[in-house]
Image (tube, rainbow, N blue to C red; front, side):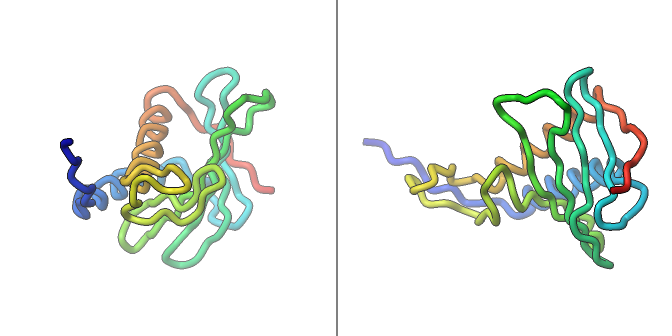
Length: 144
């Protein structure tokens, strides 16, 4: 039986991904940096996402990205992203109900996470940001 080599994260590749995500997400943030401020991003007539500032500090900001259109979908994507302004990095810290991803998961595991789950969830953010840049537009920011 051929054994698969263990996953070894490549830090420069991951940091590059986080840098690109920061650059793309930064332009979608609400103009106000106060907690509760949000911006709407409309992808289709029925798919509207809300980017809400959850925490704001001098060097970091945590935002929540969630589908906020009025229709109920089977899958309601939602994730929190931590932005590190001094390093210009954006990292997903929560996706759906899972918090704090580790660099490498043993496989198999109880949560059925992939060995590179942290990288995969940040690639999902990259794909969502690419979709926004191709067909989304920002509505007026909303302050709650």
